Length: 333
Ligand code: COA
Image (tube, rainbow, N blue to C red):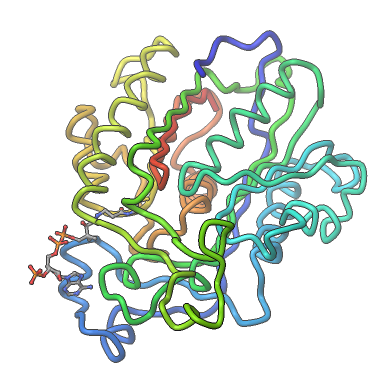
C-alpha cells in the first residue's frame, strides 16, 4: 500500500514515553548467561535495558506514555477519538491492550484497537491514524508502541536475551492547523517469506502451550540474527529513501533520522548507505536495548524533548521488524 499526499494535513501535536525503573546492565546479565559487557557492547551498542515489574503490564506503560504525550499536546484524555496500540506483548490475547489503555486513560469516547507488526508497529499505527484523520473519520488519535519483551524472552538464550527490553512511547496526531508541521510521506512493507527468522513459535493457534511442551520455551522469541541483520539494513534503507524522495527532500534537508533501535551496527550501516552523518542519526539503544514497537516511539520522544529538532525541521523515522515488516515516515515537524 503506497501513500499519497493527504487531503487534510496531519501533525504530531505531542510525544511521550515511559520506561520502567529497573535497570538491567550487561554485567548483571553476564552473571546468569554466558556473555560479557564487551561482546554485547561491540556487537550491538547496548549497555543496559529496562525491565518492567511483575505487576506492571504493557497497558500500564502504554498509558503512562500516552498521558505524557497528551500533556505535551495540551489535550484532555476525554477528547481522544482513536487509540491504536502497536504491540507483540499484549496484556492478554483478547481483549486488545488498547481497550485497557482506553479505560486507564479515561478516554471513553475513543475507538481503541491493537495492531501487530512487531518493531514496525508504531509506524504502521501512524500511517493508519494519519489516513483516518485526513479522511475525516476522526480529528485526533493517540498512537502507542508498548512492549513487555521481558515476558517473552528466553533468559537462557544468549543469542536473544541480551537484545531486548521493556518500555512504551506515544504520539498524539491531529489535523494540522496553519503554521503547524505535517506528516509528509509514509511507506510500509512486508515480506512474509521470512516469518521464521524472528518469531514466537508457541502460544498461538498453530502451537498452543500445553503441559507437554511447557518446558520448551516456545512462548519466547527466537531469531536468526545474521540473516535478520542483512535484511534489516536493505529494507530500512529502501524505505527511508522512498519517503525522502516522495517528500521531495534531499539528504541535506534532513535534520534528524530516528531509526528503530535494534543494533548500532545496523544504524551505522543505514546512515552510511543514506550518506547521512552519524550525528544526524538519533541513538538511545545503549540505555534501553530493542523495545520492539516502543523503540522508535521512545527515541522520537527523547529526541524531541532534548531539542534535537524543532518546528519546521524535517525528520525521518524508519523501522524494521519480524514478519518481515518495515516502514518509514517523513515529517515536517
Ligand atoms: N555473548 C557472547 N557470545 C555470543 C552471544 C552473546 N550474547 N550471542 C551470540 N554469541 C556468539 C555466537 O554463539 C557465535 O559464536 P560461534 O562463532 O562460536 O558460533 C558468535 O557469538 C558470533 O555470532 P553471530 O551471530 O555471528 O554474531 P553477530 O555479529 O551476527 O551478532 C547479533 C549477533 C544478534 C547481535 C546480530 O546478528 C544482530 O544484531 N542481528 C540483528 C538482530 C535484530 O536486530 N533483531 C531484531 C530486529 S527488529
